[in-house]
Length: 46
Picture 1 (tube, rainbow, N blue to C red):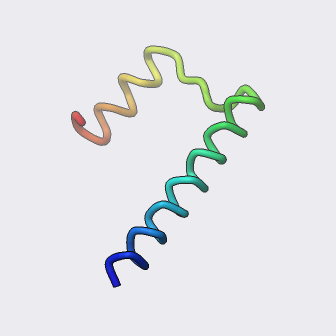
Picture 2: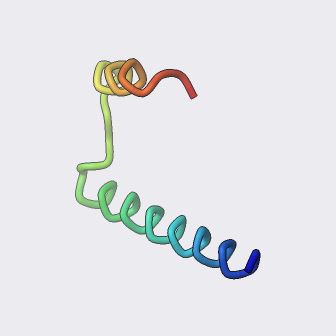
Picture 3: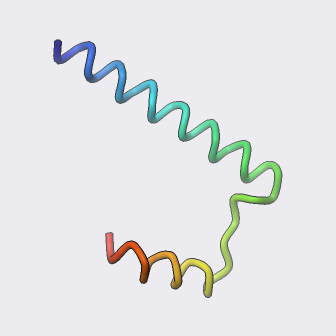
């Protein structure tokens, strides 16, 4: 069961990385400093 859960998490991570790479290529993946500050304020600190 642990292997299955790990594989699912790995697949999800790879999909997110691909989405991010595609967004950067399209120019949609970049945030300016104000956008980043706003995002971090909404989600709290990491």
